[in-house]
Length: 146
Image (cartoon, rainbow, N blue to C red):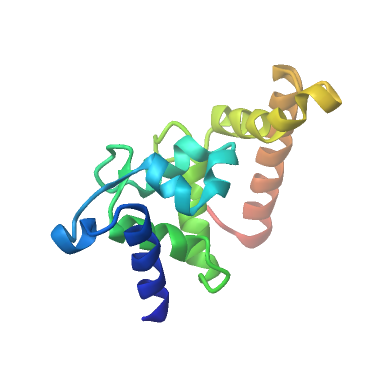
């Protein structure tokens, strides 16, 4: 309960009185990033907002913010965290993590280092995606997962 109160206080500091006037108020991305500036730097920023915005309107309600905080909490159960992570890494939102999602994920992860390390080209990203898919298949075979 203290956790929820802390989130409400943070949101109230950003836009005073809005939650008292309307408990379903939807906060803008700028307001959310005032509270959680680390989101601004995430290579998956767009995907995080797509996943956690319940109305898919690039705004978050109190409930959406609580879901976001819960998913990123150290106390979040692994299976719940894995489910949220799946949705974030399903970059095109088609219900599966495809080769294209893997390639884009690798490119997004390497983007901050492009200047320092020369980046990663599409062929290298595709190679990494094939390796990930191979290990995924090997894991499923090892554990008899269809």
